[in-house]
Image (cartoon, rainbow, N blue to C red; front, side):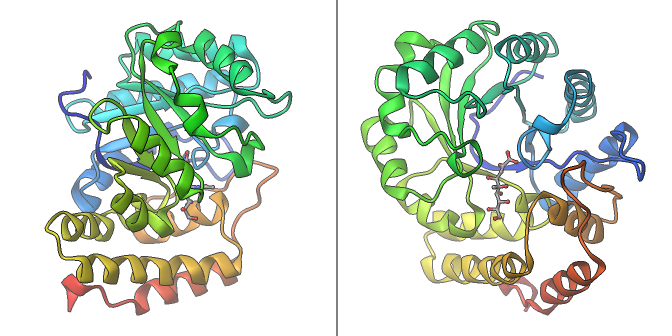
Length: 308
Ligand SMILES: CC(=O)N[C@@H]([C@@H](O)[C@H](O)[C@H](O)CO)[C@@H](O)CC(=O)C(=O)O
């Protein structure tokens, strides 16, 4: 699958379906792709990332999953971005070569987070060694400092990055520092690089700053409503766009108070889509029945503008 279109709009950070005993559940992926496309109007995916529990999977599982997403997404999805970050450079390189071999439309890499790069040069050194293993595949840096603990400003990282990483295509920016995000866009043309925002609860603010699109967990099950927010913003009908952002925020704010992470995302995706996503992998624990009941009730209580 070679990308026909520029990467923009919504990109679902997919969960990794698992069987009740914790094995990856590949047969569910065909149904998952159809659900995203037909029910959520989302045709781009980001696999094996945070939401996909990528760092909790074995290399073999990550390859199998990437292959299955590619196979099932063929002729249905526009872009399949494969996250290939790992603590070991060699594993990350192996995954990058594999993603290139199966025709992924892009690869993304998170900063290594046990031995952490201390500065821009150390981080770039790692990223460059991974990117060069897939010399024809667009490369994205995945910035998620709350989880990696690597707080190197992206604005600084992007300065001259193409000289070291010719395939550099953009950033998946999963942080609330909108000043850093704005400076990335201010100093680098949106037409040159792709700036994808990753904090779903404040996407509208990032759009105002110039985000080209967004990668997130909620686009799995709230993609349709978020797409309507994007449309309202483009129109522009800011009042309507805000209404969507506030309602999306109302759901997120209520589940965040209950404790919200990948396990809960899997549970919500299961009850909204009807596709069994299974439990998360340890150390994560399944969402409680109480969480599921409250999250469901909250979601059902929201009256979206298009369903008035
Ligand atoms: C920390 C975290 O999981 N952030 C999510 C968000 O989509 C997040 O779930 C959402 O904003 C709700 O808080 C994404 O940025 C992660 C993501 O895109 C990924 O799975 O790679």
